[in-house]
Image 1 (cartoon, rainbow, N blue to C red):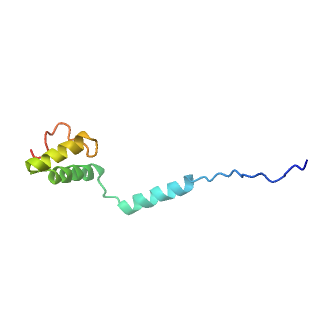
Image 2 (cartoon, rainbow, N blue to C red):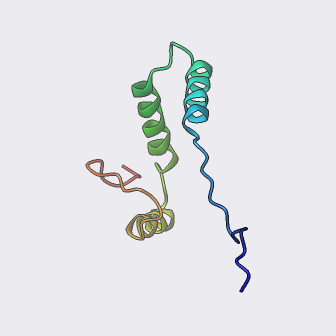
Image 3 (tube, rainbow, N blue to C red):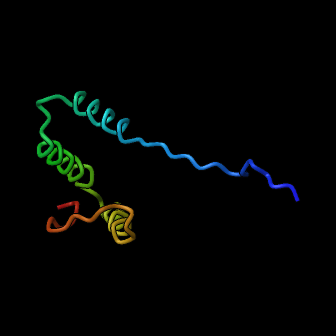
Length: 83
C-alpha cells in the first residue's frame, strides 16, 4: 500500500485584522472631524417621517401592512405616518 504524502485539502488562515483597522481608519478620515452622528440620525428620522407623511387611505393601508409584515420598521411612539 502506497501512502500519499500530499493531502487532498490544505488548511490556511488569513488574518484580516490589519486590513479592517486600515479600512476603519480610512472611513473615519473620509467622514472628517465635524461629523455628528446624532445629527445624522435625527436627519434620517426626519427624512423617514417626511417620506411616509401625508399618505392617502390606500397608501396608509399599504404602509401599515408593510410594517406589520416587518418589511418596514415601525414608528413606535409616533402614531401613524400620516399624522
